Image 1: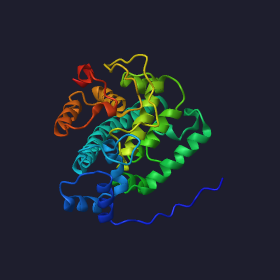
Image 2 (image 1 turned 90 degrees about the horizontal axis):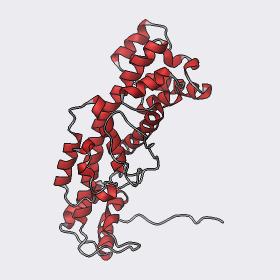
Image 3 (image 1 turned 120 degrees about the horizontal axis):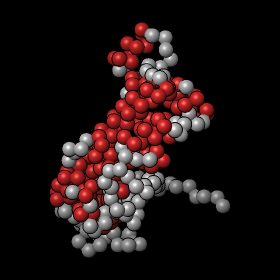
Image 4 (image 1 turned 90 degrees about the vertical axis):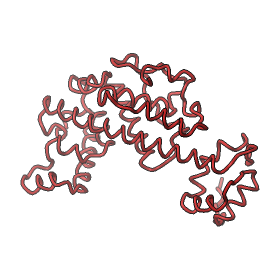
Length: 296
């Protein structure tokens, strides 16, 4: 079957507002809405307007207001920023533990040695990624090392400071099964299979945040493993582990080891107080989530 060609003309922001009004959306201040839609495309805003539409219909629910959708947009933006700030702490910790443990186990250039990895082709691809990341870096320590030494790479503690979280996650994933891989996971109270899965999920969510994409009520395409047991407190497993509640609980779990005095849960609750109309059940939060030790 031949697919049709899309060729709908672009419409102006004023026409966008008229269209939304014809579908039943209310505007408290059209000038303000005009300014917002001149800086945030309607295509991006559509995801935040969707909860205010009637199910299966192009029309909006009675009383639906553009300001409510924009408030949801701002909540999602703040949520992504808060999550990214915590991911940074976790990422830096994992860089450090991987370098320390593998450096003791297999030397400071362990990541260059194919024998430390389960798949030679994957390992070659990871080294290619690291080479590209090093070329892009203008870090003073990297530049000075390359000027002074002939090594293809700086030692792991230096190289991994400029690697992406995705490369770091894949380095862990393809490490040989064994003592060192398990030791990294044990630092966070996990098995190595759960550690691998959770790292992969965190990288996926980090990429969503980096591209400023909708997160708050998204159903994630990657499903983080459910652990049989953990050495640190975790949550009762929710009905849907592809919602943001589960990944936020995973971040909180890591923070117990990385930053035990963290205020992540408290800040999230303050954010909800600031945006009282946010439906947390759409984020996968169970009704008793505040009773969970991890979230208290």
